[in-house]
Each structure stands twice: as C-alpha cells, then as structure tokens.
Amino acid sequence: MFRELAIRAVLALHNLQSRLQDEEGQTLAEYGLIMAVIAIAVVVAAVVAFRGAIVGAFNSATGCLSGSC
Image (cartoon, rainbow, N blue to C red; front, side):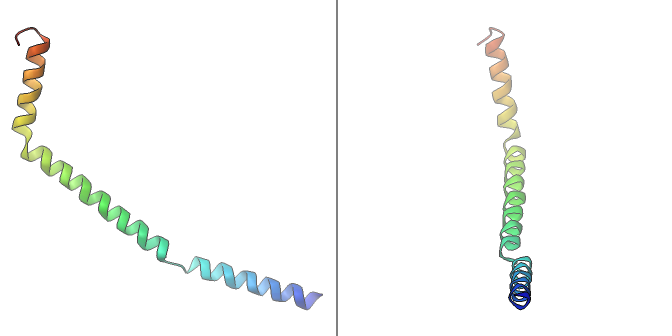
C-alpha cells in the first residue's frame, strides 16, 4: 500500500515538473507581446504620417458642428 502511494506521488511530481518546464506557452506569450508592440508602433506611425489630414478632418467636423459647413 505504501509503495503504491509512493509511486503515485513520484509520478505526480514528475508530471508537475514536466508541466513547469513546458515553454511552449511562454513562447506563445512572447510572440503575442512582440505583435502587440509592432501593432502599437504601426498605429503611432500612421497617426504621425497622417496628422495633417487628421487635424483637417477634425477642424472640418468642428466647423460643420458650429454651423459654417
């Protein structure tokens, strides 16, 4: 009885150790973080590149809202 319990405990510890050493999820998280940083950089670059058009659109919209459209 004790031997069977000891074997189960060792197997459980071995399974826990193999789960802790699994780096597949960690790699996926790293790729996700890299993709998020790239997406933010693309949005910032687009806003900087089109800031004149964006400001013009907002000025046009506020002009229409004030009645001079």
